Amino acid sequence: MDNGEAGLYTLDEALETLGFGRFQVFVLTYAGLGWFAEAMEIMILSFIGQTVKSEWHLSTHHESMLSSIVFAGMLVGAYLWGIVSDNYGRRKGFLTITMVTSGAGLLSAFSPNYLSLVILRGFVGFGLGGSSVFLSWFLEFVPPSSRGMWMVVFSTFWTIGSIFEAALAWIVMPRLNWRWVLGFSSVPSFALLFLYGIAPESPRYLCLKGRTDDALRILEKIASVNRTKLPPGNLVSGRSGDKVEESGPSEDRTPLLPSLNQSTMQSKFDMSSFFTLFSSKLIKTTLLLWILLFGDSFSYYGIILITSKLSDRRSGCFPTIQSSRNHQDDRLYVNAFITSVAELPGLFLSAALVDRIGRKKSMTFLFVLAFIFLLPLLTHQSAVVTTCLLFGARMNAMGTFTVASIYAPELYPTAVRTTGAGVASAVGRIGGMVCPLVAVGLVNACHQTAAIALFLAAIVVSVIVIQLFPYDTKGRQLSDTTD
Image (cartoon, rainbow, N blue to C red; front, top):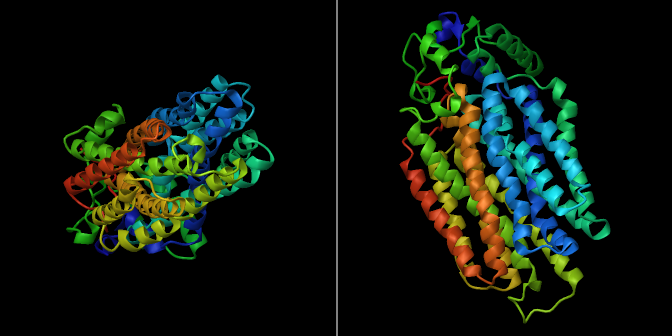
């Protein structure tokens, strides 16, 4: 390597040399547990709403609010946790995140009334809004050449969490009640708190803060655990003042964005990182990403929520179908379980595509497939056909959601990575927040065609937006700063 001959190497070169070994497996497990916990808390919304509605004699609007309040909390949390993580470190970010999520999650199981349940679930959503911190933290330990594949592997934790929650509800709800499901679902967040002490800080964040010696100690630990060696020479932070690059990088090593000089970078930290997202270099990316994640979240969560509503034959929209209550409840859990399992082939498909054809083409292809599977649901189908179509739609929706989650933090430099990805995720949560009002309200009112048409429209807009992104991040190094 050119820098190695000069006695210098960058963080990306060090990670490439160290490879993906046992150290990264631990980081993957810890960060993945964060997404596992979020998936469980989100999937709860598919199961407890109808039960709480019946027990407390709530209206459909109040049932929808249980879902919307979680996404509203995530909207606020995604922005705040991104700021905390970018300014005070990734570890401090997910420490506070897990404290809020685990505490509010457990307390919500003891809610004495509807108002207290809504407030506590809002705090759960506030904690869940920090999921992008776990994603960005893991991303910063992965070698550039295999980043896409390992980020898809990371996303499997979400799917496993969804499947686990469906199985948990299937087992617990008929035997105990919804409170036990809420209590059990908070356990993964407490596990994150228990393991927090051995989770390392991101070396890329440390380099950005000028703590190169601390970053080097973590890299040396990675080398020891992975039984590899660091490149010869000295680690440099990647800032222009360190004179990192003495020759032009190859095409595959081109940084995503240019670096700042020292004085400009220092001034950036004196202002809110939120406003940096609207700088001339980032504003187009920011706005396009917001629209993409809004449409992606709206369609993905819509598919999850309409699974339970289309499986509920008590709505009066399907008068020719008669069955016992137990059979109807079993249908809900079975369909939720089956469509959750559908995410696994979606992940395999996205893993096969993301590093081969790139992020933009992968998302376009998967969105088109999701559109094709949803299209027949514009009219009522049999229960079996509906389940099969939802299986295919969710498979591809999960694929697009996964690739978009990879693409978002790659587009931003380290200085604003968790803020940029977090705020984009927050805007996406607005789609998730609006979605229950559409999925629950329209389907309950027997307007399935209108609900599906809105999901199809969201997919079309998302596909158009993907084509407007100026570049793909396949094979590119992560950037640390931008002007």
